[in-house]
Length: 350
Image 1: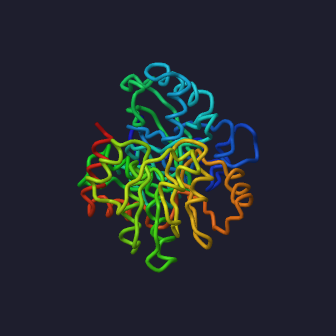
Image 2 (image 1 turned 90 degrees about the vertical axis):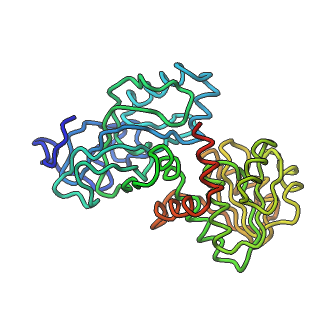
Image 3 (image 1 turned 45 degrees about the horizontal axis):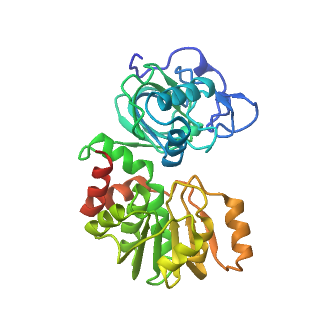
């Protein structure tokens, strides 16, 4: 695509919506995230920004599901290509989730409020499930064996989209991995500060969002930090990183095992596990008057609500929606300040 600061004639003259309603093709009248198909035409409307895509970052729950269904490799690549071709966006039809992307701003509409300029290298902070996307290279450089997907194509940001300029001091792959989960540590910080020196458990503490959430909880004043992980290898990595006071092993899908591993109930439980079935263990681990924060896209919210009712658990349950003002800068600062977190991220990238 030709990089231009101008806006081509055509769609820019049509009425557009800051929420992207004009890009919805099927069914009409819904928001882009709910739509089955979006229009990925890279000609911008007056308030849109077009990004020349360099890399996609599939969310963990979606990538896990694709691997389990298709076995990996070329079959996963073909599945992603099929989804994007059919839907005009990357939204896993099973998990409903997508991920985010990295690229260079290629065109900016004259009425765009995002403050971006042609040539800015950015990561989108809105989900691929609502981002019009076109893939032009057949994902020829991706082997299907990683959540990060080298890609050549175009994406469209609306007037109410969010994007972050990439930091100059971090490799692109590392920055993308952090920005993909930056909502988790920011909300963890906010919730932990609602309490006075609370105890905190993070289910999935060895992953991307989990390790950042542990670091955020520590910075926010947690007096006891428990990291729950599924394997001894992950436990060893978290111990080396120095992120938790206690590192315990359990299958997060086994409620009684989670409760036993955590021991004394905590004030705040943060769920960062990318598999379904972790709701009841998180509730059992949390004391009455406490809070459970669900960040996993694999969470069943009916299971969480009905499970808490059935367990007579007086806990507040929050959906981590991925956006907190300042979340990108907050996550980057955590990574820079916590060498252990950075080591975990870099190990995942290799």
